[in-house]
Image 1 (cartoon, helix red, strand yellow):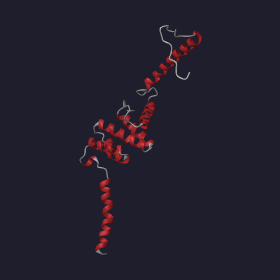
Image 2 (tube, rainbow, N blue to C red; image 1 turned 135 degrees about the horizontal axis):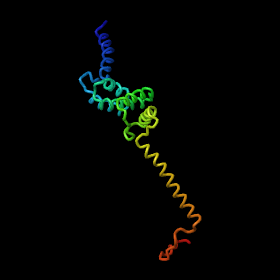
Image 3 (cartoon, rainbow, N blue to C red; image 1 turned 90 degrees about the horizontal axis):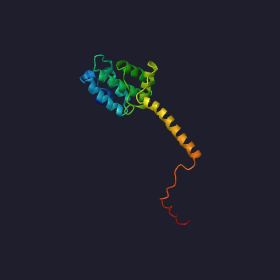
Image 4 (cartoon, rainbow, N blue to C red; image 1 turned 180 degrees about the vertical axis):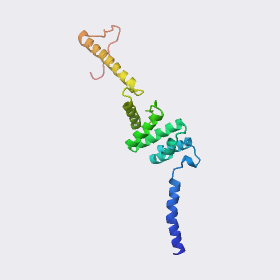
Length: 182
């Protein structure tokens, strides 16, 4: 084998190895704590690199002795990543783990993906048929308001139809102006 072919073989092996080293996620085992990994994973998630975000956070959610707040946020990001990738079964498992860790957890409709919010609420309803999500109470109460408002409008419509002219003319008002061309 010529020296030139050794260089080509070396490049053929070296390039994929270098790429793998650069593309591989940095795990907490390499000296980076889960809080820092969480920040990196959120950045990956923001840029649509969902698989990378999941890979970064996998060891953090498995660490039973880790900070519960960090684990909660890690489950949230992983769950939203699975929803974004349309991996519903994985998302349900992740969200159920989150709900086991934090039973009173509520998603944030302002900052979380709509599909994720609905999936969390669906799982909570499955475990508790009486569960009402935050904000849904106002929507239900809004239904009563709509009934009352509708009734008031109906009564006013009847009064207008039966009662004649509801607004008496004010004798002190001037006549309307005459429009040109009439």
